Length: 110
Length: 113
Image (tube, rainbow over all chains, first blue to last red; front, side, top):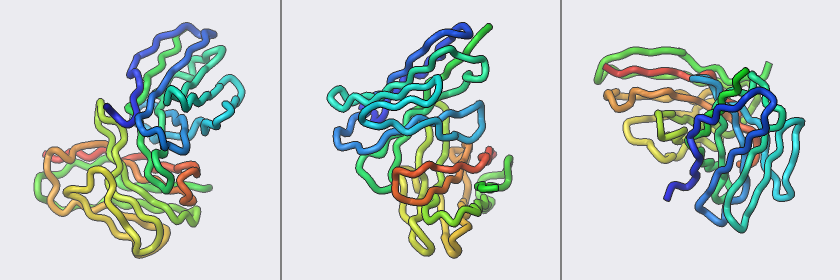
């Protein structure tokens, strides 16, 4: 089993739709979680950290489910500019070792 | 402007010809790291450095070297490149606690013929 698993997609959704991605992780001791956004062949950029109680940033909501070992990202009112690959990132044991998922591709269409 | 500067952006070389990809950050970050990104495999860590003169292997260190003689610079060295090192490479830095935001360079697309 991979340390971090994501559905690669692509998820094709119409503008204005709500879309959700999940990411599962294998190490139950994992301590911190992030969502990064990556545009085609460009550098990843932090979208948001994921906190135990869940957190929201505008149209984006991140949730953590420790019991089932997954994190989720919900995007409301999708915009064309949301089209990108979303990377799930897990810190499995503290320190600076981050494990990246392979990413979920989102395409928002008119 | 806070940034990680990585050069070159594109590099085509031949098997066995030593090359260096440079990485510099202007944020006084202690932590720096190199990743390679391949289709279907995601970002994999090559080497990382917690501070000057402190480096350690990541998940895929074979065929690579790094050095951290100054805090701002963290070059990636391929002593004898091979075709399986053809990849998209990213340098990144952070303040260093593991929960900090990673700042990435703009990437280097390397092709080894």
